[in-house]
Amino acid sequence: MESEIRSFINTSNGSRLINIFGYTSRGIPGFEVHGLGKHNKEIKEKLIYLTRLRKIRVPPRRVVINIDTGEYELKSTDKNILWLDYPILLLYWYLIGILPIKQLNDCIAIGKVSVQGEIEHGLIPNDLLKSLGCQFNPVEMRQLKLIGAKKINCGLWNIDSKLLLEHIPQLSFK
Image 1 (tube, helix red, strand yellow):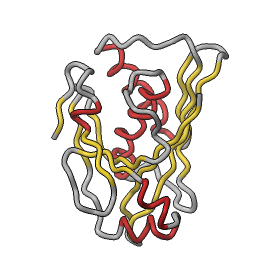
Image 2 (tube, rainbow, N blue to C red; image 1 turned 45 degrees about the vertical axis):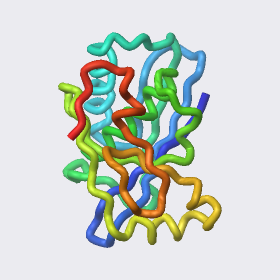
Image 3 (cartoon, rainbow, N blue to C red; image 1 turned 90 degrees about the horizontal axis):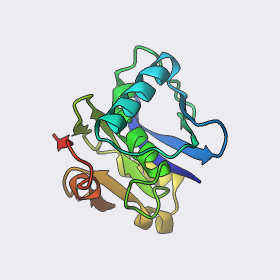
């Protein structure tokens, strides 16, 4: 199985769209995260901890998640890395089969996740639609969905995180 989700980071030059993609295979079971430099291990261990604490069964498969930042290079001191936790978590849980959603390919999410299970959604930048308009045609734009805490009138469909993750215990939303 393979999938992707989009996120964005705020830079001094405006919003930058980030593609986060991953796949599962029947190789040696494990979990890998690539593209965050020295933060790869940190995010991987956090997601494993959150999953185990909630007693979510992980199938014996190899799961690999990659962060494609495009032209923008993430620096290890960059605070924007924290805001990629939530979309990476969503993709991981989707790939192991516990998210009740048909596909993530047309979704955008941003947020931080604490080890206690508190999810804080990021602010949606004003120039997000402009950034998206450069990468998608109008038909694709109408199909994009924003996964967030509340309905935001930004021209995209909205998916409420609380409803999407209501079956997973011990999560709180900020």
